[in-house]
Amino acid sequence: MNNDNLLTKNYDYKLPQNLIATKPVYPPDSAKLLVYNKKNNTITHTLFSKIMDFIPKDCDIFLNDTKVIKARIFGVKPSGGKIELLLNKPLEDNRYLVMTRGRVKIGTIISFDCNLKAKVIKLNIDGSREVIFSQDDSELRFEDLILILDKIGHIPLPPYIQREDNLEDEKDYQTLFASNYGAVAAPTASLHFSDSLYKKFCNSYNIHKLTLHVGAGTFKPVDAENILDHPMHSEYYNIPSKSAKILDSKRDILAVGTTVTRTIEYYDRVKKLDGECNLFLNPQNKPQRVSYLLTNFHLPKSTLIMLVSAFIGREKTLDIYQEAIKHNYRFYSYGDAMIII
Picture 1: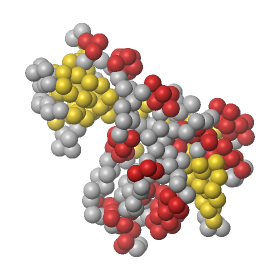
Picture 2: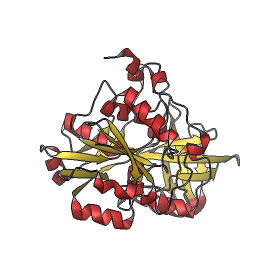
Picture 3: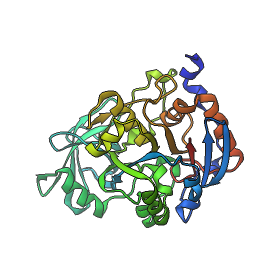
Picture 4: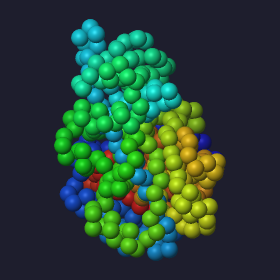
């Protein structure tokens, strides 16, 4: 193992500020697509609408059907101080893991619109908090909380977008096939599908769904000097038994996105249909089951650029990113895409 691949600083690159996408292109499949062919070591520049020209015909395609929650809400403390809360995920016994912007202590009760309240019951070392949500003195289950957040919450755009969410984001930051509420970030590789292109996909390939509820940890930077010292976040996943049959076969698989990749690779290692996925793919822990990867362009020194490096190596990944910068590709969640075949 090349020790250079273990150093977080070696996954860094400089990105011009103007290449950070703050909104999507319309239609979504007019986004750029960089195609990297591993066998030929070639790069092709095209549009996402042409992607079917490059995907091998005899492969199965996996998508993440998680749905983004309006997880960002604004409330007040008993003192009158304003506070922002970001729901991360439900825990057991009607408890929830959240992040807060604004000081709280155990016992603090935060009040929101619709008579929603959150009582802080635990402060975690990593800065997260555990709360219990209630309305009219009744503790709220996740299914009921979602209905309230739909009324008062905001789409939790990634921090690097640096603008407030708007009505367009409610559609743009959600995949066409989103069906299971639970994510605080979209599986962004899937945002490029237009209705017509998605229908063509479904008519041409065997399409399979799985669920991984993307958590706020996906944006957590790797602060450790050695990547293997990074505490990987965990996210809830579920794989339908029909989808698992394909994963247990020898069929070639295209994973649409890093979330799909991590879920498939975790299943390949543990053979459990649901649970908490905390798999960290990197050049020392390479994919074993996914054949091809469709993804966006990711943050420097992130676990996601390390995941891409697990497929094609760190140096090749950084070379491709420089090529994308040279050709003015748009980066991050609302940006352009690349496919590794």
